Image 1: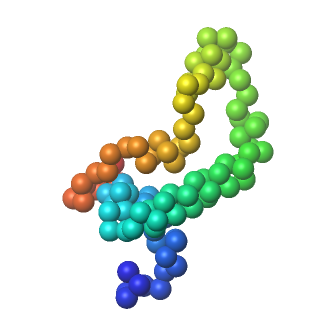
Image 2 (image 1 turned 180 degrees about the vertical axis):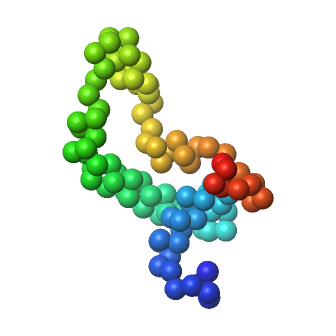
Length: 101
């Protein structure tokens, strides 16, 4: 990648991690994979905080107690971030169109 494009390594690794065909980062060392995942988590958290003011208005609890309990306790036993949920999804084949995925 460095040979053809002058892309900072961290940005390139995160972009590759976000491709559902290559997200295992099998070509990279364990430390590079860990770094890319941590950077992605940090970026996701920053985006969540940036949207916090907008989300606070939109995320009011439902008035219905049943709906409130469903959505509030959705992951009570094990809270995972969106990034962790994405990373748990199995990688797709290289021939699969990521836009259709």
